[in-house]
Image 1 (cartoon, rainbow, N blue to C red):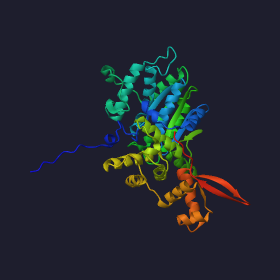
Image 2 (image 1 turned 90 degrees about the vertical axis):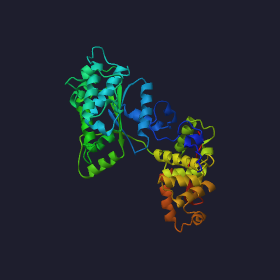
Image 3 (image 1 turned 120 degrees about the vertical axis):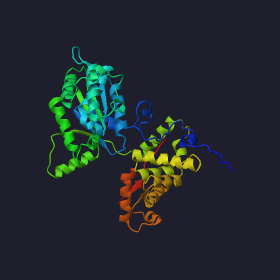
Image 4 (image 1 turned 45 degrees about the horizontal axis):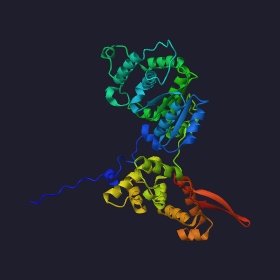
Length: 416
C-alpha cells in the first residue's frame, strides 16, 4: 500500500513572507495606528465641534472605520493634555450603559488620566468592585468576558455585599465625579448604535434611546468641563428623516455631526501603502497592485475601507493558492471581487481604462462614444455621473471657440 506524502500547509502569510496580514480587518489601536490613513479634516471637524457642542456625533456606514478613527482621535486628545474616558459599547451594554461609562471614568481616575479635586469623597477601588459585581449580575456573564473584564482581582468580601450599583446610582456618581474634575474631560462612546441590537430592544427604538441619553446629559450630567463624542451608524440620519416626515419629534438635538465618508482614490493608495509598509513590504504600491488593477479595485469597492481590505485579502489568498507571482493583476482582482460579491461593471471599467489611456474625454466626443459602444450621450452621461460618486471622477471645463464642454478625468494619484 502506497503511503501518501505529507505536504506542508502554505498559508498566505508564509507565501508572502509577512509576519501579520496587512489587510486584516480589525480596529487600529496602539502600534497598529501607524496604518491609520489621514483623516485630518474629520479630526479637525470633531475638535472644532467640541468647542461649542457638548455632544458630537460621528457617523458613517458600517466598516468605514469609525472605531479606528475614534482611537486616533483619542491619541490626539491625550497628546493635547485633556483627560479621556473611552467606552466601547456592545449590544449587552444596553442594560448597564451608565455603569460601564462610570467604570471607564473611574479606571481613568485610578490610573491618573483623570484628576479629581482634593476631598472629592469617591472611594474609587470600592466603587469599581461594586460596579463589576452589578454589571456581572445584570448581564449574567463572567467578568472575564472582555469588555467588562476587571483589572486585577475582585475583593470577594465586597462582591458578596447586597448593595450594588444601579443605572441611577451610576448617574449620581458620574455627576459627582464631573463636578470634581480638574481640567477638561472628553468621553468617547464607541458603537453607540449597537445598543439597539440588545435582546430586550424593539424594532425602531434607536432614536428614543439616543433621546433618553442626551436628555440625561442635559438634566443630570450637565457640566461645562465634560464633552461627549458618540459613534453612530448612518441609519441614524435615515431614521431621523423618517421621523420628521411622520411628524414625530424627539427630545434631543445633536448640533454637531461629523460624517466619515468613503476614501478618495488617493487615500486608498495611502491605505495600501501604510499597511504594506507596516508588514515590511519594500517595493512600491504599484509593484503590489498595478494601476490598471487599482482602478478595478476602486470600482469594485467604491473606495469603502472594509470592502477594500476584503478584496485585497482575497486577492492575496488566490495568488497564494495558485502560486502566482506576488502582484495583483486585473484577472486576479476580478476573481477576488467575484468571490467577495463586490460587483465590477465591465462598461464602467472600459470607461476608466479609456480615460487612463487618453487622459480625459467628454460625453460629446463621438470617438469616445463609438470606442465604448454607446449610442447616445444620455447613456454615457449617466455612467459618468455614477463614476463621479463611485471613484471621485473629476471634471474640467474646456472652451473651444464659442462652445464649452465638460471633460472627465481620473483623479491624479501619487505615491506617498
